[in-house]
Amino acid sequence: MLIKKTDDIKSSEITDEPLYFNRRNFLRGAVLAATTTATGWLYKSLTAQSQVTQTTDKIATVTSQSTGLLPNDKPNSFEEITHYNNFYEFSTSKQGVAPVAKNFVSRPWSVEVTGLANKPKTFDLDELIKLGQPEERIYRHRCVEGWSMVIPWVGFPLHKLLKEVEPLANAKFVEFVTVVDPTQMPNQRGTEVLSWPYVEGLRMDEALHPLTLLATGLYGQTLLPQNGAPLRLVVPWKYGFKGGKSIVKIRLVETQPRTTWSSENPREYGFYSNVNPTVDHPRWSQATERRIGEFGRRDTLMFNGYGEQVASLYEGMDLRKFF
Amino acid sequence: MKEEIGFIKFVVFVNALVPLVLLGYDAYYHRLGANPLEFFTWTTGTLTLVFLLISLAVTPLRKMLGLPWMVKLRRMLGLYAFFYGFLHLLAFLWFDKSFNLSAASADVFKRPFIAVGMLGFFLMVPLAITSTTGWVKRLGGKNWNRLHKLAYLSGIAGVIHYYLKVKTDTRIPLLFGAVLLGLLVYRILNKYAPQWTQRQPARAQR
Image 1 (tube, rainbow over the protein chains, first blue to last red):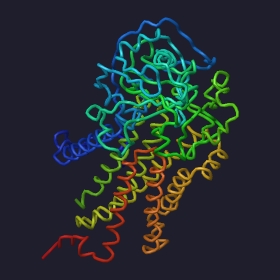
Image 2 (cartoon, rainbow over the protein chains, first blue to last red):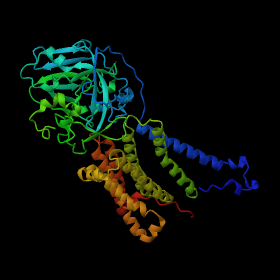
Image 3 (cartoon, rainbow over the protein chains, first blue to last red):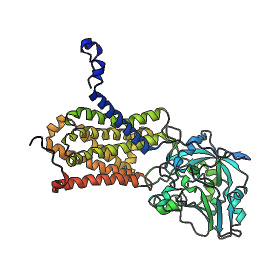
Image 4 (tube, one colour):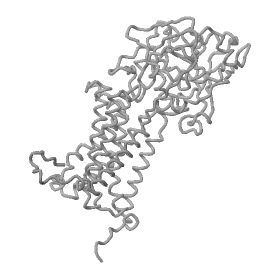
């Protein structure tokens, strides 16, 4: 478009206002306004960036422990932790989980602990959370996709629950089965995304490790649906997907369970999935990660920086083979 | 409509900038979510494919609808695809590789999805360069048309790149692939059975 400088136009040449806003220009303006509004609306609705403000109940914690936290680890904000989630049952968009999950009802809730145990038992949630005093644990969280956060979880170590049911000697693995509820979880209405339920598993010694947490909250509040309400697993030295969300069943078994991601794509996701900067995902490097809130990438630490506590579990194992 | 082509081009030009303006606006006000860099990369990548497919849809649409003037929008739409593709590549090189070009090229050789994406982008480079009227004349319409069939290859590379990137939910890449396939099928039909695929432009006088 050519825009003339004002001094070039004689005042006699300036069109009268009523004529200037003639029908054609009006229509053109309307077309421009209508199409850009429509384009903008389309863009916004396809990229869904909605923020959901939610609050939950406070949890009175007894201790706060920041095991293995490094000087440059700052907890991510509540906003970040609750609006950037991988929870495929609700949505495969990390920003899209919070709005879809916001009305998820997780009460009443019970967890069946079954399998190779002396005293298998179905716990009501209120009974279960009394098994351990709620502790705050500030852990690094490393996603297999190459991003990470620092999250102040609230929960208690899984071993307290396992001790309650008395595992038998031949219970070598623990399987975690998560909720199936297609009425509340849209992606469970088909199997295009994954096959349901989402199942995860740990070796018994991993499950009994003091760092392994059953989380019921974060930032001193009960969990929001997008973070795995009412109860989820947190295994800080493994990739995030190992931590099953909204758990309904825990089975003690003798053989290694078939877990969701490693069945879906055995070449890319192993049963162990320990954070390991030296073993790349076939499609991307695991050597670095983007800490949410930071611009550059930082180096990924072996066992997500928890090597001192957990490396002994894997002594003598080829971690390239058992990735 | 034909006499309004200048205005229509302006409308398309402004509309194609709307996503970028909103992206910039949201970035300025920190509304791109918890991982703004990933969001920017994802959005510009998606826009590249969207504009590539729209530019490839121009010919089928103008033939089916009998609106020959639509061809005048094609260059701009194709250049927008190139522009968003450039932003997408820049985001990868800057945010993910900090402009460490040796690390970036190592990635190209190691990771098929990045290699295919790069291929898709670099196939657009000669098309962007030869998009001017001068180049059409220099190459001759026939050669120019032949060269610009590369846009289809670029689109195929883009769809494969997207498909390889997602972890499991392949619905959106498959949707893009279906649209691209539809456009290719149209081209084949148009070659062998144009009576099915074209509407004759209305005669001006009788």
